[in-house]
Length: 540
Image (cartoon, rainbow, N blue to C red; front, side, top):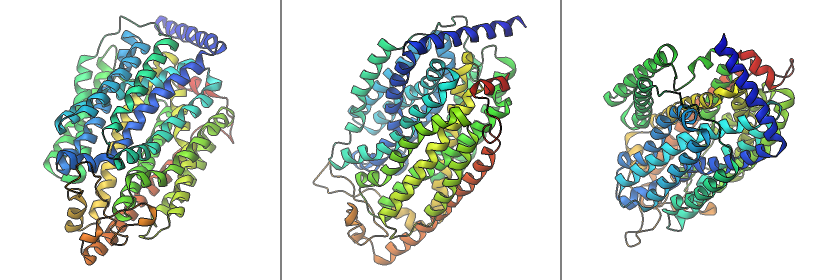
């Protein structure tokens, strides 16, 4: 009882401190610093994807080997995130957050200088480790700085970075790749990282560290094995097959280790890494699950559509980014508005409306053909941006709104850790659905080494344009290498790939329906909405 009273008193003290900070504008400084830093980290999750064929070409690497440039980044993201809560409690959240940005910036520098593929993989791992710590801690600082009645607005503005950065990545990456300077997709992080660290050092306040917090070494061991093995299995499942021995062993070891990790954290550890008991709260659990489903829907567009635009329609990386841009613009407009509405009406109507739009939108994407107009696709992207602007931040805000201020960092780490696993599994599953609709020779055609001009070492690989003319979709910037492919094989590849996209988008459509139904059970209008204070009261 005394311990609970102490927690309650410390929570009240933190609340009063945040109110004092609100009066002098500190909360807005936190918002600016965190949004700036996290924007850089999230941007890197997609900016590398468009350079992937070029990286393969430059290092003369196979598809399976070069895939680790992306996979190792995600692996280290997932494995470092559980440590975020402990490190912030032990050494101070400001120190760890700025250190994480520094690690990410160092990884960016080394990635740009990497002389070989293994060196690039290692430096990408450093980026992932830094990003895995920075993401949950940035969100935790944001929640601690704003009073409950303003957190919807704060998360709405922060959500611009969360949604705009992934859409900007392909444009920026495509522009650099098309100009033969792919290494600058890493170098551009350096001035942003240095500025973020400088601003954070000056403007952010340090939370008093709890020097008595002990590291749960056994939990850390099983979390690294669990998250690492699960993410590894997801990374190789699409290529090796879900029933292949490496995938089965990875998932088996990962699930067993994660189960042991949960038991250790809940029953053994005195200072657990992740706060799993939070899932015992119905609102936190429901909002988290809806958020995970929205991640599947988000990556359904960001993973599948660039493949459609480049492999089937022959667009360059840069023009692919331009087609995706309306998603970011629409989400950037809607997300802050949704944040303001959230503070007044709660999450229910926002999430239900957003997923209703997403259902319609995803069904329309499942009907894409080989000659669908780019104007129509841009419209679908804008519609998707509206849906995501209504849902993604609303679920984050609701889940963390049930968490006491003293547990925000651990709660944020818990949400993000599971999010990385769901995201990786979703991408692997969608890639598998896409591949199963293709014959072996079509898959071999798409996995064949990228073709550039041999006398131009920095030339970008030409897109396939299976559904375009032999010269690609020139009206939209496509080059295409379809001229070298027999017409019959090109037609077969177009037909089978379109069927695969239809099946993959149908899957995300059904997931959106599930999320819509779960969203009905979130709090808010038309029933009584007592605000974020009531959310936290429901968790105690």
